[in-house]
Image 1 (cartoon, rainbow, N blue to C red):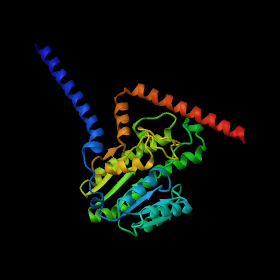
Image 2: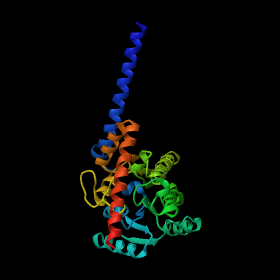
Image 3: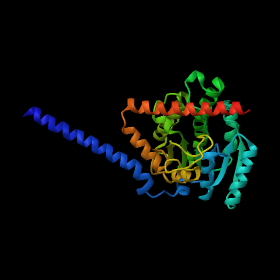
Image 4: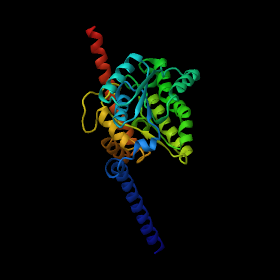
Length: 316
């Protein structure tokens, strides 16, 4: 009898665990993307300026446009001043009632003095939203010692993917803390959810972004500041080298609109409903099988990239 009671009890516990897992999955997918209404972002930001890094291409540029559409003045930061000027003009042509400022900064520069100068410039305005988007990836997946670009590229990926969310958050948080309002979005990657072979440094640095942001939420949870991790899957951008959009691969504009709608409703999400669906389904697969699937996909991507590289070399 005691054995039977134990088995029955264990069965109920197992059912409860399964039910909780399913509830969590549906909540993660439907909550921020279907059921919950977007918050009043300007009210929660508490200031009229939004800073976006890596703002002249891809997701960062899309964030800048979407924030301008919502009435924020935007302070865009990227490496090349000419591209910043072009992006500024594009934003103003579409949203003439906002103000756009630019500042050029090379995020491969790890010197504290450079960040101090950048922060002095940015803190010249009241910042309500900080989008730490700038990032760098591999040219194509490969094992660590064969990564295209070698030590220089590995150093740049490590620097660009980890220092900006750390130092810009540290330098801008004081004005948000003083106001008791503000929003910080650290853009990571779904690559942080798995230990991805052939993407070692990229995956590890994006895990850093996720871990850092989660800790910052604990440190500032009583300060009235929203600190969110966005970890997208594939978006049709220059960095992803994907041009064709689909249900699972949105363009930057659709992604940024969706991602900003999740602010205040999810602290850690992919930013897009189809991405969240993929993430939740992948998480149900046993780790050893998931690792095999991801590695095979990376090997295929590497092979395709090398074939393209060979064709280009022959055509020259």
